[in-house]
Length: 432
Image (tube, rainbow, N blue to C red; front, side, top):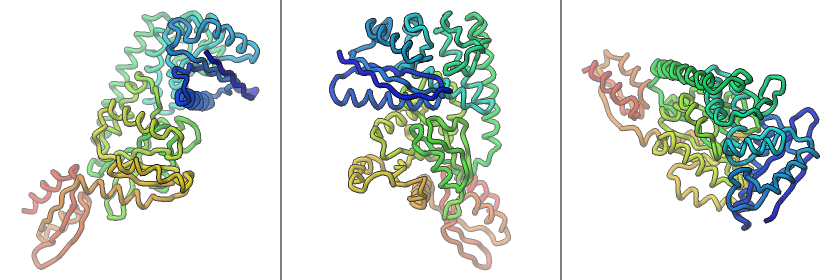
């Protein structure tokens, strides 16, 4: 077996972390995949507020049931923890409660797996009442089977990564009290979901809805800014935004749409987090079109696309009309762009853009119009000249392709999206 240790410098004011993974396949592809996964884990650690001081890899076909790593490797890891004065060890895979307990006993420091780290990041970045409730529920359900005396570092006198969210009250009470809290949070989320549904019903449901989806840090918020000329928060870190943001946009045809930025996806996204965030992710469910934003220059672009598509399938949104948006095209050398032809063959709607540079935004708007047209029907209607208010309302409900006037009627050629077809029919019945 081969082991790899990599050392890094750190900042005094930030928590020191060691990140760990196993290499399941010893071939070049297996090692490259593990390295990329550790790169992402290191970025997650940075987002959480830690500096990675060392990376550890060990070749193993499967993790050890008790310690994840081999016993000798854990002993070496303990030496490095003490030498580097690391305060936390982060594992790229999910650990069982038994593994967490045994590793903390052996290493003498906090142990957190990938899911726990992602939950911690979400807890630190949640701002709305809804997001905070969702995160607390996901954290409590995640940590409940992992409660041991080793978790005394979660008391308020310590703090650090893995301690945000529930805090000492939940961790230090017994399982019965935590389960009671979980039940109350589920009830609270149920109420929030009903309120969310009521707000959605009260919103302008006549406008077509577009949702931005994609792997975290693909540039969704930057793209929303580029499309709407707005100033949505953007940061070059994973999960920079959690709460959905919706903006109204007017297209060149005069049609108005609503565009929503949603939380980014990531490989191994905790299932409990997806379940808790279903209210926020319901924006995807109600969307007419999905803009799947891809960091086209990323070395693992195809894997990111797969992760997003699998998550959409889990949310029941895999069959929605979709535009694949190849973002950051300005960073891809021209001689490498022909490699994208395979993607163009797989997706009927695909647009290349640079959200940062504003490149391709006009083409994206045109593609949105095209996809909306595919879900629309053409109709020609006549409205009596004395019912001009109905003609005016039709301009709001549909795209008017042509209009003609005579002494008795206004003749309109319309493109009506399926969302508004029944409304148009009812409106025309009033003029009959």
